[in-house]
Length: 79
Image (tube, rainbow, N blue to C red; front, side):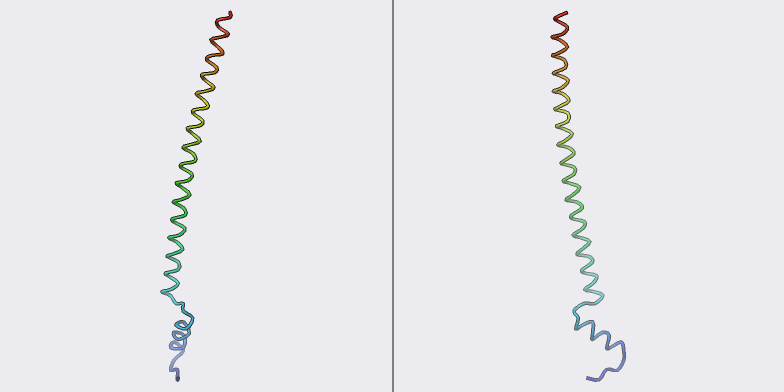
């Protein structure tokens, strides 16, 4: 095979490697999609975690408030 220019040699080398600008672009797009989806998954998990922890915090706070009200009522009745 006779190569005429350096550019043809470069194109042939890229085609043999299996990579090239188009393949690299596809790989970057796939990677960015993966990171985007992982970010969405993390955001959803954090939202669920903080919502559940907030609800449990409210439940515990309500329980403490109810307990304090009962204790105050008992103390108030004794005096």
